[in-house]
Each structure stands twice: as C-alpha cells, then as structure tokens.
Amino acid sequence: MLTKRIIPCLDIKEGRVVKGVKFLGLRDAGDPVEVARLYDQQQADELVFLDITASFENRKTLIDLVQAIAVNIYMPFTVGGGIRDLNDIRDLLNAGADKVSINTAAVKFPDLIKDAALKFGSQCIVVAIDAKEEGHKVTRSPSHKWEVYINGGRTPTGLDAVEWAKRCAQLGAGEILLTSMDYDGTKDGFDLALTSEITKAVNIPVIASGGAGKPEHFYDVFTKANADAGLAASIFHYQEYSVRQVKEYLGQKGVAVRL
Image (cartoon, rainbow, N blue to C red; front, side, top):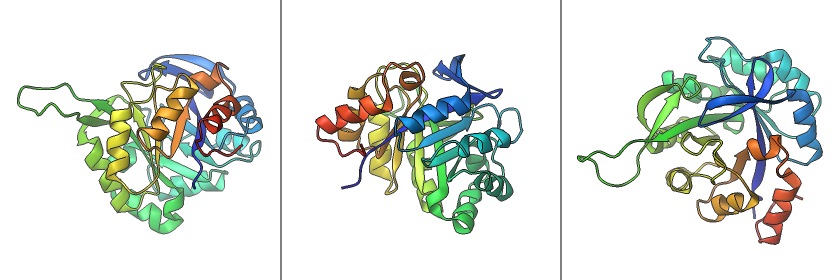
C-alpha cells in the first residue's frame, strides 16, 4: 500500500516565509532555512517551496535561497514560482530541487509541460492548479465548477479546473498540486468536493492543499477524496500541530503513513 504523504509548504515573499487567508493578508512565518530544517527534523515526507510573487513580478525564483534550503534538508524538495522555460527548470534542479512546480507558465504555454516531462522526466514535473469555485448562474447546472487562476491567484483564466487537470496529465505531468483558493488558510478543512473531482479525473498523484486546520482534515481528504498527499502551512508554521502529531493520528486511524 502506498503511504499518504504529509507536506509542509513554504510560501515565500521577499525571502521570508509568509501565510495568509485565501491568498490575502500575508503575515510573516519565519526564516525559510530554519523552518525547512524544523520540518526535516519532524520527518515531513516532502517540502514545497513556492515563490508566490515571482510570476506576478515577472522574475525568476530566489535560486540562492533554494540552494540554502536544499543543503540543509534530506527530504524531497519541490520548488515553484517564476518558472518560464526549460532553462529555469534545469537551474532549479541543479540548485537542489527534486521536483519543480509550474503554474502560470503551464497555463500560458501548455507544451512546456510536455517538453519538460520529456527532458527531465514526468516524476519531477508538478503542475500547480489554484482553483476557485465559480458562482452559480441560472443557466448553469447546480453542480460545482472551479476556475483556474494564475499569477499567485490574481488572474482568472476561464479554464475549468477539472478539464485542465486532465490535460496536464495527458501532457506528461507527474503530479498535481491542487490548491483551493476558497479554503486556503481558513483551517476549516480541505475542499473535499474539488479534490474528489480532480482525483477521479486523473491517474496521477494529487496533492490536496488549502484549508488544513487539524489532523482530522488530513484523514478526511485521504479517505473521502482519495488525495495522495496533504499539504499545509498555517498549522505547521505556527506550531499548532507538528508533522509527527498528524502522522501519529493518521496511523492510529489506519491510514498508511511513514513514521
């Protein structure tokens, strides 16, 4: 049985870890290298680093900071933010990233997913999808629909999140990092409806993100929405729970995790 992964996320702005609610109201959460070391000690399964303003500011990610983190941790390390082409991906992999996360560039240039998967291998190409539920209209069926946003959640694309996830998988993405913008930072639990729709639509691993507030939320997203991994920031950054505590809870509930 494949174990479920618990993944802390470092949202980076101006070289610091930050966290907000629904992508707004960012507040400081510490030094990235020190925070990364802490999660390595807690035996997190992976670490995700997202330079959340790089694409919006039309710049590359902070590669020196990526290098500084990479030499201090022993867990798999995914980096995203500001990636525009194959050279950017190569630079990040050379800097110590095990995987790269592409969002804005993937939407603008979908062939980048295919080209990157062919050159570097699907296993290290993660497509990040930031999705927000659309308001229902009279002409629309009552079923849920989610729209893809880019540029750190600033720009709507008109793309349907489920259809976009399918296309990413077809193009060669090895994994989907799915963030619910509606649930992000709320600590009310993951968006089970969104996550379930995506996991049913693709045959590649899906990392659920947005809304984790307690260990029970990870249990729900694994057992009710079939996510392969749960990503969180707030509850770990502010030491409400440790990665170890979440894993121990899941293990007690019969969920396969690496302890």
